[in-house]
Image 1 (cartoon, rainbow, N blue to C red):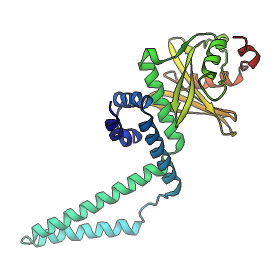
Image 2: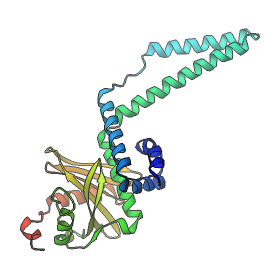
Image 3: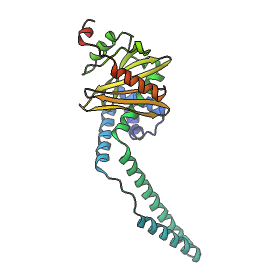
Length: 265
């Protein structure tokens, strides 16, 4: 994909209009194109700024009544004056175009008013998860069940210390990890297994605010996200929602890997 083609896909990608296959192609392009990645981040920042400043207002009942009255008047006039039908039709078309414009603006304001930053991050988490699952060789960059190998590998490639925990006693063995890109910055992605199912856990530095486990879904896949203040975590899998929530709680309860252990490798 060329940079020119990538630029044309920025807005459809942000609006979720590309579909999975096209989105995956575009995300692969972003990994090798700093220009498009920077422009995507700029547009998302602009969108977030607009959403934080623009209000959403519903049309008052008086406007609805006035529009219905005007539509009824225009329709009656077109029936009574057959000779003036072309003009009436033009008036009707102008009125219909105005209504479509009003509806479109209202829908756009509703979307941008309700689409929160959390929704955007969830969409990116889902897209990164799908990319990893569909591309078997991209699921992990470092393939190992040993957290003492996975953590140093990730730490060397990121500007923060990754939290890697051993959940094998809970039937959730570590598969490996990779570096990914979400919300405008590099993140760590750990992959655990529950039977035949992969659970991808994304993490990046948090903003100091602790938040409990929350859940959601994207196209049938289950998500759970939380923050311990130091780190923000997003887990996603095709498992049932309760199983992903249980994974999140088990990860929270498990003891972290100590720096002393990580330095042994």
